[in-house]
Length: 388
Image 1 (cartoon, rainbow, N blue to C red):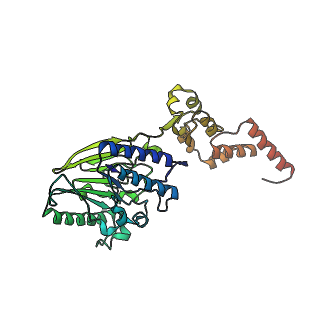
Image 2: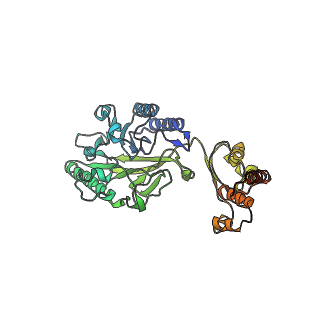
Image 3: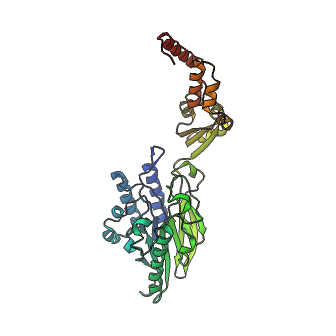
């Protein structure tokens, strides 16, 4: 079972997600037991931050106990959000319980071996390699490369794995699976992944993974197939509104004595629907078209020509869990062409200047009551003899 990017401890626009992450673990454990999954792969970003909270560590502990209790072993690598040192603590001890951590550079060419079928010790075997997150500046020298780039360090890492495979394959049939947490060219990113580099420089080409039976990638949050043998499982939950249309899941990889025999999609049930809404406030509040979004987490973009008063409060009267609110007024492009300095020059009195400033920074003209308050304030200043 290929999974990745659990991001335990992450919040969704300020909303805690531990309960949703527990629900995902429930689904995963049920699936492992029902389908007889032998190995669960986690291709990095198990945690959302290097110093996870106590309850977050407890959730991972519970997940690993339940997965192994359901009959599967776990192979886990570290991602860019994880602390490789902390995540890899007690790895030799955990291995005895069926949890195999690959968080250290020295272990990337030391596979976890799983026999394929009954037979002698020299029978077919599955070798699962884990490449931890490779920060080029920190690992380039250790990998013997002169250029600190994602391409060069990943190329060196996969070369070490190929060397080990070559030695093992000389005496027995070895089928390989490689875990890697990286941005492979051809992958489609979403907002909740943090940039690896500027301008896509950090992307690595797919041909670095040629020759492996299956490459289980992590880092991008959308489940996708880059080639039949190279895939992203994506995150089990949506972590940004850009993922609203994602079908969250993973890949079930069947491996036999003859190698990879099939890859099947697996879908996880989402705990909450995500709604990305756009339109004028009154339309959103009254139209039956948006009934489905009333129980969803909502991102709303209002297109009213002027910014409505108390927009968030009014939206939450219908869409209780409106988490993100933006404004893109109709005609905004034309309005933007009129600079504030020009509008200031065209003002014919102090009240127009103040009202114009309010409209400029708020996106909505002053109403009668606000205009009266401004006029009263200006008159008080005039009576005090202060020159504007």
